[in-house]
Length: 80
Length: 80
Image: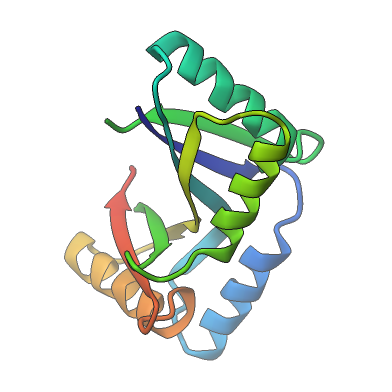
């Protein structure tokens, strides 16, 4: 089982990385680009575990290690 | 136009963040999880520009600011 986890800042949380990208773009005259938000994508494989249990494990790992639940939200997608 | 850009290390490039996550998981007895790869997801909006030109701008921005073409590859998806 292969999973993709998208970790993003919650809406309303100031995204300093995104702002830095926006400012960099303004300097380079890309004025049409806005609302840049930067997050993380984590791809991982779960071996030898049935699907529902595998997804539960990924969810636990997200809470434990991959996302900061105070300011971030995550989304788990099965990719194969 | 809203775009999602996934930036990942090229296959074969050592992913130290991914390895750190794997090691952290082993300490916590998640032995079934392997091949962890960590990348970035960037979401942005392009306003007032037609679709093909907007995508071309996003592509340019990827090369300029968002990805390091030496060790990273990127993928652009239109999300809305």
